[in-house]
Length: 334
Ligand code: SF4
Image (cartoon, rainbow, N blue to C red):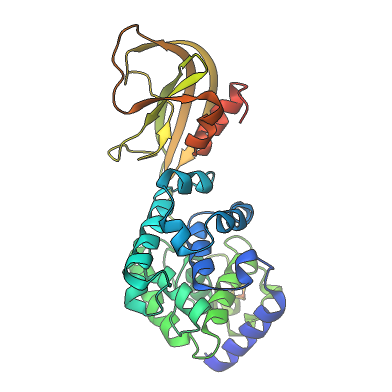
């Protein structure tokens, strides 16, 4: 493997072929950080329309730190994995408290922030600070597995661990951010999971999998986890223009700490007519949810998790797209 040649070819390709994405303009540490957190487990297509709107509302770490959590969750609506938004705000509070509102530039300080792991620290330091820190994500694992002919499953922790020393050896002192992004861009657009476009690949002549015709066999296929079925019956309880919502606790299996519609059985109300149904996936859970009209039993005290909210504000509370599907299904304005 000729490292300098490989790097030069991939960097030149990146310079001419990279996608025009909003977070690639004006790569400040804050903008890079927000984009990296949004892009974890969420597609570029889903993040792109949300990203600028989020930054308009929270243009600095201080503005994020001084916001209330529900407001941040509202601007995260539709991106899923809401603990990311909470950690973003917690980290912003720490940036204000410990770093005077300025994003830290030292590796250990970045890694110490809530929600930031080795990958995100590497991305921020290389892209925004031009420091030669490596990163490894799903795209990089796939590219390395094929380029170096390494057999393993991309989600196997032992295999992932093997990728870090390779990434460390390859990351250049000059343009480390471009190098890291070039690797990920190659994985996202050329060295794709299915049918990689080896004919259009700028580093095909260095690629062991291509030489051996193994590009479709590497990395090894994942062992598929069977989705866990979950069934909920939720209630639409409305009185004098107000709707009863439910704050889910941090003990819940799904949608922890988020507002939702109450599940039947959690308060004194009998489910009535079915008004909507939806299927929804969260991590490896396959939810089937039905929504029924109900009225609370007269005189029954409401549990502390329940809250009456004006109907016009319901959408501000229900950030998960599961609720959106149900509201649409019931013919309520989303
Ligand atoms: Fe991936 Fe094919 Fe390029 Fe190898 S030659 S890195 S398998 S796209």
